[in-house]
Every structure is written in C-alpha cells, then in structure tokens.
Image (tube, rainbow, N blue to C red; front, top):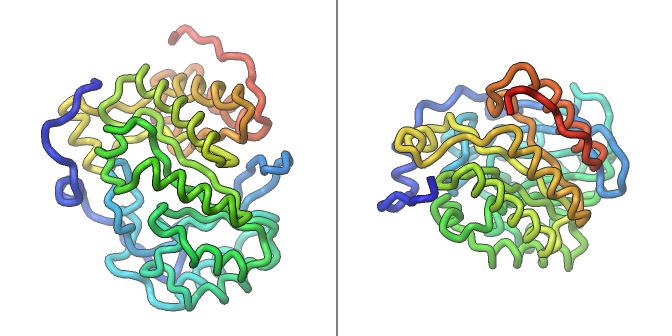
Length: 314
C-alpha cells in the first residue's frame, strides 16, 4: 500500500472523478445541531455547530467531500449572517459555537469582510467561537474578526499529516512550515488553534496510517495547538474511490482510531478528539460497534482511556 502513483494529483484529476453536487439553498445552512465537547478549561459543554452553505473551497484537496454541498459561486453579501441567524433561532442557547463553511472562514471570496460586523452581533452571547481556515487565509483579517467579536476566537487548521510525500499528494497546497507559521501567528495574538489530523490517508497501509497519525498529533502539539481532532479518511468523494480501485487507498479500521486516540490522550499535551461522523463505516463487526462508539465518545468527553473492548472480531 505504501507505494505512490507515478502521475501528479492536481485539481483537474480530482475534479474529473467527481459526481454531481447536492442542491443547496444559499440562504439556509446545510446543517446545524448541538453536540457535546470538552473545552480547553476542562468542562464538558454543549456546542452549537452550524455547517454554512457557501461556495467551494479554492483548494481541491484529495480527501475532501465537502464540495458536495456547496454553491457554484460565492453566496451574496448578507447570506452568511442570515444563515447563522436562521440556525441560532432554531437551536437552544449554548455557550460555544462552531461555524464551518466548507472552506476557510477568512477567505474573503467566501465570507466578505462586510459581513463580519453582522456576524459579530449574532455571536456576542457566546463564550467561544470556533472557525476553520487554511493557513493561506490566516492573516490580519483574522485579527480584525477577533477584535470585532466578544467571544474568544479559536481557529481549526487542517494539518492532515506530517508525512511529507502524502501531504504533497493531498493537493492541499500547504507545507508544514505554513502550518507552524499560522499556529505561531495565532498563538502570539492570543488565539487558540486546533488541528485536524487524518487517519490513514491514501498511499499508507493500516499500520503506517496509525504511525503517521501519532506522529502528526505529536507534531501538532509541539507547534502549539490546544487540541487535535483525528478524522478517519472515508471514501465516497470520487477521487478516493478511484484510488481505492487501484489499491492506493483503503478506509481505516475503527480499532486503529481507538489506538491513535489512546496515544494522543497519553501524551497529555492537549485535548484529543475522534471525529465520529459516519463512524459506522469503519467497522465490519456489528457485535462490538456500538460499544466502540461509546468508548470513543467517552474518551472525547472525559480525556480518559477506558478499558479496551473485547470481541471475537479481533
């Protein structure tokens, strides 16, 4: 599995393997819900999470499937504040808020700076606001938004992997230097940062995927992030399915996710979360799946390593 294709993966190759987008409304969020999460202060609280409808990210990352629910062009001015208002008016009050927009919050082609003040007024009652961004968009606009809002700002960045060749193949157009520079910029300006880390991206075997995810967590904390979210890479975006057909990609096992989360918690350098979205797809055993999901959820919330799940599927 740890061999590489002999051609360049670029925007054209990735988009050529895509299917159709889903129909979306530029004036309504794609999704919104409440989830529980452990905070940097050590408490477990409810977080309002809003997946904003927006244009596709300009970076065509190999593993991304968020493009499925995006518009073909940027949404008009006022649409993003309108979506936030729409979701918040239908959600119970919480102290923390996540705003994810299928790309970078600070990409002004996606969210115009003219909307910042209206967004700030909508989020003023929260303690924390979490957004995501590619390092290429973390700049003075980030500080301007920070100064406009009352809540503490946190920024999530996709580190993905510290494997140099795999990171390049992901077509993310980002280096480890870029990641580290962004984390230090945020930290020096009083902004906490988070890292997204992939479990078993293409071109890695199961054991390699686990090893490089662990290395990536260690690196992320060394650069100064306060939390890491480990995302098992899932098929279904077209490009990964094409690679899977040629034996360059295979989805990781849920037990590998457990191992990586255990490692991260043992480091005791910051919070370590497992992304449980579509988690059922990473297990072939119905006998232990629910117990493993519950174990991962409890480790997310309490940052404690719970006893391993025994099952004949081992």
